[in-house]
Amino acid sequence: MIVLYCASIIEAVFLFLYKKNNFEITKLEYRDVQTLIQRYQLDPDCKFVIATQMNVPRHERELMLDLLLKLFVDKNIISKQLEGKIEKAKSIRNTFHLTKSRSGLTVSPSSIKTAIDAVYETIIVVRNHVANRQP
Image 1 (cartoon, one colour):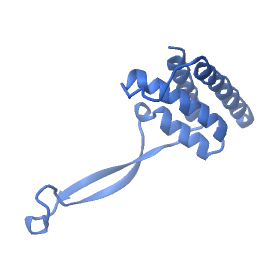
Image 2 (tube, helix red, strand yellow; image 1 turned 135 degrees about the vertical axis):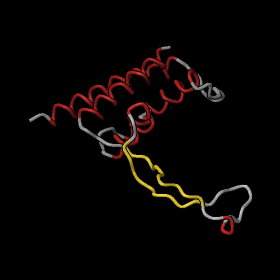
Image 3 (cartoon, rainbow, N blue to C red; image 1 turned 90 degrees about the vertical axis):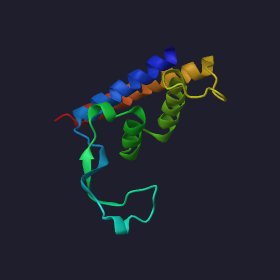
Image 4 (tube, helix red, strand yellow; image 1 turned 30 degrees about the vertical axis):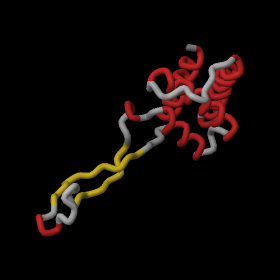
């Protein structure tokens, strides 16, 4: 349970930073989808279409820990070392609420300490990042 809460705290702190700094993570969306006429339908298991492909901002409910972590690592806000700790906590957390296989993953005092350290370090990094951005 400790690891589950640690990952949730990290996710909440990341979401705070995301909103505070007006970051944007996009996704591809397809609009105006038009199915090509039958003579261009070469595969009976698929439909060939033409569509407008657009990058649109992801909704807040789509901002999972993995996307936020990648964003903050790419922006050099989170170090690779801290990323590793967060990934460990996330992997253990996912076995609880995504029914992911636990084979090869053990929850030990060491992994709990890693998760707690990740929470602490994340909060410090985010606090410093926000403080440095204030006018």
